[in-house]
Picture 1 (cartoon, rainbow, N blue to C red):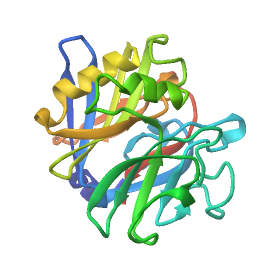
Picture 2 (cartoon, one colour):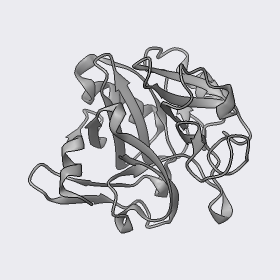
Picture 3 (tube, one colour):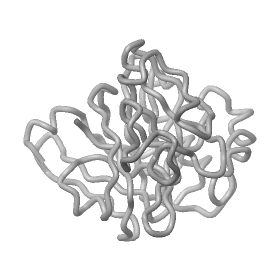
Length: 235
């Protein structure tokens, strides 16, 4: 990892009042890159967090697209490469670089995304968090078939969230918690009340981060040690 890459983000570790410990990387959306991998993040030279869902053999089950090119290669119409939220229309966080605008769009195919310029955006699929609506987020996450359900087993969690100031946070916890506990912790401790929206990423043993502190210390959240097949990293 080039030394200069640490300047692309600011790492912090905070504990919410409900006990959930959040590891967060604050960055500019213009520095984000979605990448197909095949390892635990501790074995990556790149820094970042785990991305979308995946299946047996490393098939990508969530949208992960840079400038209309799937992270796993192939064409925008291919399954299992990062062009499709396989099986369900799901919350997909989009950075429209030409318009300098975020959105969370509930789609199945990357080709359905509404962007200003298909050669200048990125999109990461997950599950809608609806940070602005405590009354409807559970029904939306349920409609998107959030793994384990909204009241499911406590486990590690990952997310991408953004604020009104244009920042994005890559967030991971290795505290075992429900989706609601994780969402509550993020709203309390990330963005100082300025968060707009975000998505849940793959969780459980897939919740992983590799990062560096301002003093150069490498921090690794390794989940249960499993291999993951897509990450959110930096250019």
